[in-house]
Picture 1 (tube, rainbow, N blue to C red):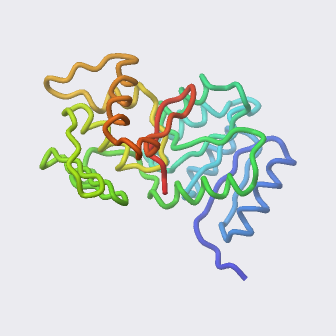
Picture 2 (picture 1 turned 90 degrees about the vertical axis):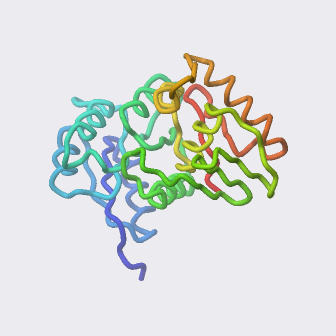
Length: 232
C-alpha cells in the first residue's frame, strides 16, 4: 500500500471530474480533500492547510479567480501553491490567475497522467511564493546562471548576455516548470538602467534563445500566457 504523503485540496463542482481526480491522486499516495464550491474551498484551505490546491475556475457562487485572490491575500494560505483547472479558450483567465499567484494550470480535458505530473512538478518546486532570495548560482544540467559573476555557462562555454537577459534567465531557471506571464517577468527583471516595456519581453526572450543555440527549447512559450523554463 502506498504511504500517504502531501495533502491536496480539490475544488471542483463537476462530480465526474472530481471523482477522477480524487481516484488518481489517492492512488499516488496523496491525502485528498475535496469541495464543490468556492466558499467551502476557502474554508477548508484555511482550516486544513493543504500542501496544494487544485482549483477549478468555473465554480458556482465564488468563482476560481475569486478563490485564488482570497487565498493569496490571507496570511494563513498565501503560500499554498495553486494549480488552476480551466476550460479551453480561457486564456485571459489563465493570465489573470497566474498574475494573482497561481503556480500552474491544466486545461480540460486533461489526462490523469498529465495532471499527476503537474502536481508532482509543483510539489518538487517547493511551491512557496516567490521571493528575491533565490540562489545567485543556479545549475540546470549543462546550464549555469551566476548573477554574482554576471556569467552564463552552457556546455562549459561562456554565453554573453545583457544584464536584462541575465535577470530573465536567472528567474526562469530558478523556478523550472513555473509559467510566468509577461507582466510578472516585466515587474521582476527591471533594474537600474534596464528599459523593458510590454512586449519587449518577447524581444529579450528571443535574444536569450538565440544565444542558447541548439538548447533554445529550454525556454518554452506557453501560448497566450507567457514563458517557462522546461522542468527536466
